[in-house]
Image (cartoon, rainbow, N blue to C red; front, side):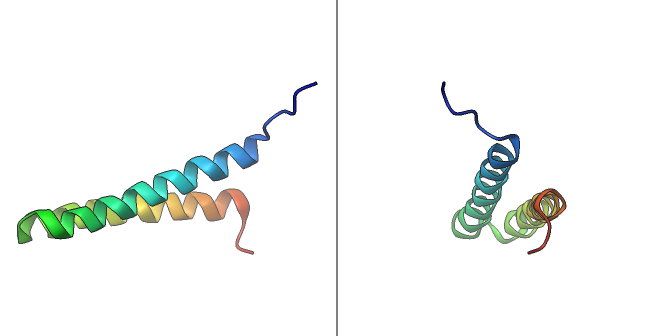
Length: 63
């Protein structure tokens, strides 16, 4: 019988991928755009990153 994937483990993987992509987006913005776009884009991505981090902590608890 194939091993089932736990929902909690899958959520952890998805959150990790989204956090990593958000962080990569912030780094890419700093290198390739003008100052105004960097400030506004980084602000938006930091909000997304904060929401994802809070979701991670809510789902898995602060260890």
